[in-house]
Amino acid sequence: MNAMRWLRPIIRLGMLVGAIILIMQFTNCEIPSCSLTTAQGPTGVVERMLHSIESRDPEKVGSYFFGPVADIMRQQMRRLYGRFETVKVENVAVELVYEESINARVHAYWDLVTTAYGQTSTQRVDQLLRLSKVNGEWLIKESL
Image (cartoon, rainbow, N blue to C red; front, side, top):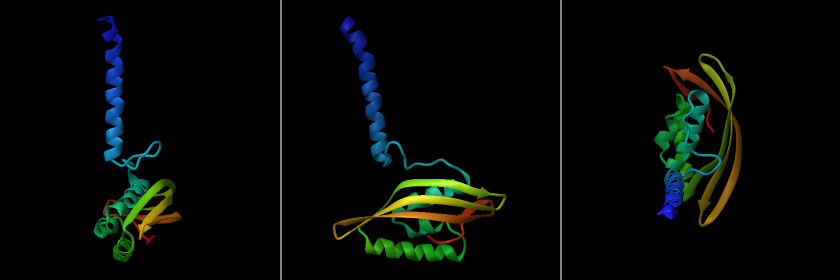
């Protein structure tokens, strides 16, 4: 009976670790950088936009951009999705450079990983993005 007493906490810990691993698998999270973001403001918009690229939904990606730039991004995403079998965004880092009431600048770095005809390619992207607050919502003002 005493042997089972010390075994229960170990089993519970194992179950907890297993549950965390399953959650990470289903949400496509990696340690130490998880792809989920709850960041608000300009940096959160940029992070969510970058992760939305993997959705293969040009409308969703375009929704993070302002005015004619949104249409340009939708067209770029359609071309990107048409050329590549897989499109992934990895190793995202986002830094707020400047923010005032209606304007902001965000410096973003990420790896764009694409696969075509069985060949995988990784391109490191480093971009300074301008954002504006439109009707209370931060939107990106320039294409990638």
